[in-house]
Amino acid sequence: MVQRSAGKVAVVTGAAGGIGSAIVRRLAEDGFRVVASDLREGSATEVAQEVGGIFQAADVTVEEQVAALVERAVKDCGRIDAIINNAAQAGALGPITDITADDWKRTIDVVLNSCFYGVKHAARAMIEAGTGGAILMTTSISGQRAVGGHPYIAAKHGLTGLIRAAANDLAQYHIRVNGVAPGYTLTPMTEKMFGGEEAARKVLSSRAPLGMVIEGRDIAEAFGYLASDAARAVTGQNIIVDAGFMEAQSRSISFQRDPDYLDHTR
Ligand SMILES: NC(=O)c1ccc[n+]([C@@H]2O[C@H](COP(=O)([O-])OP(=O)(O)OC[C@H]3O[C@@H](n4cnc5c(N)ncnc54)[C@H](O)[C@@H]3O)[C@@H](O)[C@H]2O)c1
Image: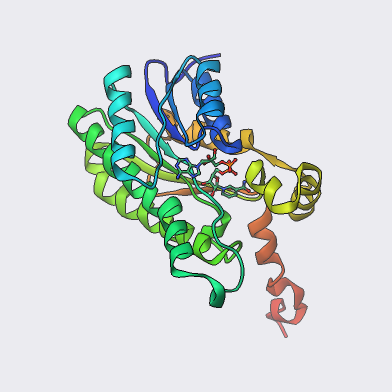
């Protein structure tokens, strides 16, 4: 297999998780040396070792720790070509009238502010090196529709704005900024949400018009593309990988249900 990103270095946050670990493996297959980061040291260290990468602990809600993560990549691997801001938590659920300000702020911190820190510090390092790069975010269908908890939906919508704004700002340095928006994907996050793996598999396949269970690997493939030079002309975009979930929402309100509307001869 041709390693289209051989010699390059990528940082991946949330690397112990279902999607993060799949991204680490996918990027390593493409030749990236990967710095895998997570709060959960054990699993992230394992995935880093599996691909010959390195582990660095970081709480992505703390700007200094994200800055230190980028510094570690540059110091120990010599450069940073890509960062995948992937760590997040589902956050507070339930009616908006019951959500506390603290719960709201915690979710915005872990889902949205964390990505701002990643963009800022990776961009600084890339600008200093003058090599360009790819700054990527795991967004969500919750950034397109009101699916999930209120603060999570608001934060994921915010990521779309961050991607667009940063893409505009950083294009002059040949830094591309993009996102991948997973639909419901089988990971520890959704297993917890739907009451275990078996129950999650049933819910996930029933919500996917393609009748399948989306796995971390399906999401990682889109990141593999966006991190590579194959996507050299792509910036400010958010690729939806949802097995048809979003389009099914459009179909349910389609005018095709009203034959009279389509017949312009009457
Ligand atoms: N699974 C889905 O259906 C789905 C759908 C849409 C978007 N996403 C997004 O995909 C990304 C990965 O989620 P996942 O499903 O793999 O979940 P996951 O729970 O398996 O992985 C998330 C990882 O992030 C880490 N993390 C959480 N808070 C952190 C912090 N403050 N600092 C550092 N690391 C932290 C966790 O330890 C965990 O390993 C998230 O951004 C999530 O919002 C997931």
